[in-house]
Image 1 (cartoon, each protein chain N blue to C red):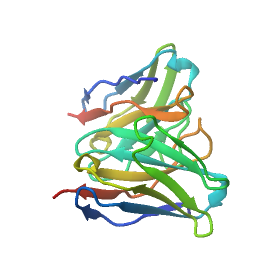
Image 2 (tube, helix red, strand yellow; image 1 turned 180 degrees about the vertical axis):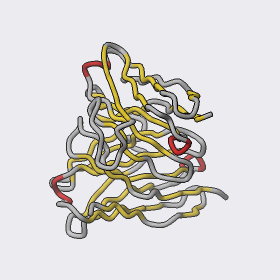
Image 3 (cartoon, rainbow over the protein chains, first blue to last red; image 1 turned 90 degrees about the vertical axis):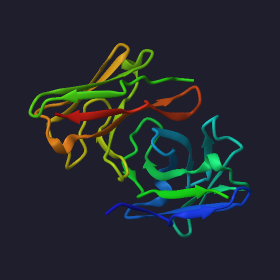
Image 4 (cartoon, each protein chain N blue to C red; image 1 turned 30 degrees about the vertical axis):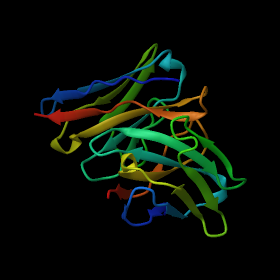
Length: 119
Length: 108
């Protein structure tokens, strides 16, 4: 059974760093892309970027380029999303997703990680 | 960058047919996917590549795509179909995915 299990909710102060994770199981991790999707409170879905764990090829949405870093550790089947300096506007639910190629659907979703940034 | 336009809300009477549109420039030439999100839950894929259903999705859900509009059709709407629905495509110009703004479906 394919599963994407994300790390737990986080509460951070502005300016702090953060790294959230997405552990994959039930399939060959290096054969699929992993993406990240943001959903701000009461808002829609936003594409952040994707990584191919097989060779670490990473592509960011222009809106998120330079704002976050996506990485993966194929030795432990885990993808990451990190911030070096959080802002209040980063408060959102973050989902990791699986996709096979660029034109294929996001066929599996993690349960989401709620990040709250507040002083 | 590529933009997708969805109506903010659609209402349908119980047992009737709901149609949710997703507009985009020549979207008929793209692979369109649809996701259902119920309150407090992660989105779930309901239709992919125009009119394919993942395992476990009822046949009541179908899709079509032509010209500048893709449509998600939900036949015999049930109370359990109330949710937000999002369309999604791949934007080759940015090498990234794009989501529509989402449509809230209300079953009356």
